Image (cartoon, rainbow, N blue to C red; front, side):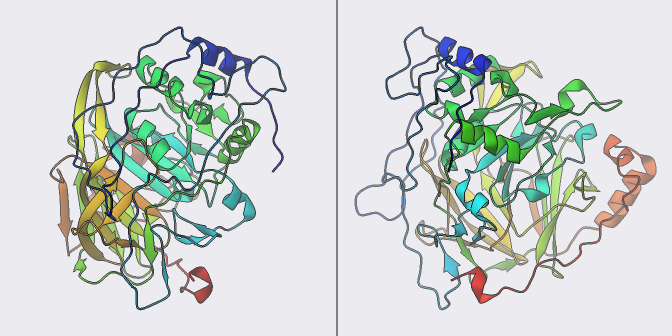
Length: 461
């Protein structure tokens, strides 16, 4: 793949001025002879970064103002210190992962890459806002292979959307990076696209070995791929959108657009045995500002998303967002008084998504209880049954992860769907949410339309 070498003078100047020593911690490797990690959850936050005037280490790309210079990016797709698992024998040949995948399969979806371009590019995380209501409906979330929703300061949520199989010409609105994003970048060996970050997180990124994978106007990456779309009545900070294809082009210029393959997820069209029927998943995120609901539609086997009582739609297509899998991850949330959030002038939350914790998987109208496992600072996220050995199998397709507080705080699961049609109609009637004003051309309820094709032998080995 042809490499181009174009760097922003602003980015390079920032890199020179922000050279730091590494402070990120690593969790212990699995014990000898074990096929699953023995990683108890830890409350130890990552240490605060301390800026120094020391030169960049010799194994770090050295910035230069010469236009033809490029950083040297060294990476491997099969880290030896990543935990591995042995999947249980399957009666069918429709299982992939969690350790090995056919060469043309995307480990994020369990499906073949739709093109060589998708296969050869890197996982891309884009930070997308979900508050205030005026930022809804967002653009481009429907194209993501995986979306993480998690709590940020102010008791609201944001999204980390991960793209690989598909791209979006307009995704956003794009907002700032958070502490959890630093772990997600390593977990998925990804690029990170965001609007900016407070000074603490900014220096964490400069101090990382993946700083060249940070794409942001804060470091001189502007339009394109990050462009402003002013809109009457919408504050400036909610007007930034991005083009994922152009983001991949920037990564290509930096020589960091390698098609890395991460491990951890297992896929099968056949649901695991032992699932309990569950068609309605409600998540109350800590305050009246944010709740999320997923409802299973047996007509197409997908889960449809509701946000604060309204159908959550894509701004471009007008269709309700849906997923093939919904996974809820329980994680400890720690206040970091050493880091202040500039937006709400409050203490930053650190989400401890390393070690292990409870995981609930929803697929095909069924509910499975198990564990998640991730070694801090290492690639991969594993979903396991309670024995800590047997992988839970995702349905091939798109997956949304909702990260919540212990002990599955605010999560309610039911076999009967709530009447969300009536709820949405009441909200539209009273116009109690500004988001309702943006949906005048959209019916109060977006009736799910079956779009999933019947599985064929070509889609899985």
